[in-house]
Image (tube, rainbow, N blue to C red; front, side):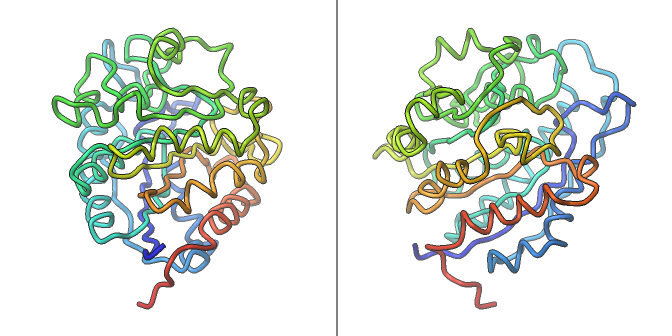
Length: 308
């Protein structure tokens, strides 16, 4: 793969509800923690810095819309500019968040850079397919896959203009374990053409077969490439407890590597995004250390070194 890795930080918590104490969550600290652990050097990457979000505003959920909707819209546009620049320079982007809403900016930036449609591999313990009216929390993080495919009566579902950021038929949703939480939009998801492989289906099919099925969706000839979303809560909480909405079970780190490494190394992969790691829940930084090692393993081959 004739590309270098570029890291972009997305230190944002504006897409997720506050802690129960009413304080904004500390997901915005994640890029700094991973940089302190040497992720730039580990990936031999170009560091394109952080894209700073607007301040958190909606500590109380507003009626009829997502929390911080104007701020998320503004931030997605700023983030898209940085992502588009990196992709246009033929870098493989590692976007370090932050909350899940950053996937919208990532998709907006990639579609701009490649001037055409892209696919999306969405690896997450939750479907994130609610609308603002269906969501139990009002967090964009609970609805960002729905918004990406244009579902919902909100400007956030129209970031791509008349067309959605990604077409449902070009999406593979892998690893969700939220069957007991239908507020994530399960009925609409079942009626959509999205390839939906929950965690039990990954085990039944085998991780290699699931990767093959995902690639058949996102690397089809009509697409200009694909983006990979990895929510840290997709990883089994035995190994990754420092997330805000953990779900029991799920793949261990080595299984996540087996699932994602062929995707990362695919020549049409445009970038990888990591979200929902919360440093406030990781006093000894053991989870951050595992995530840094995970990214290092996923990006350990197939990329050019950074020569300055």
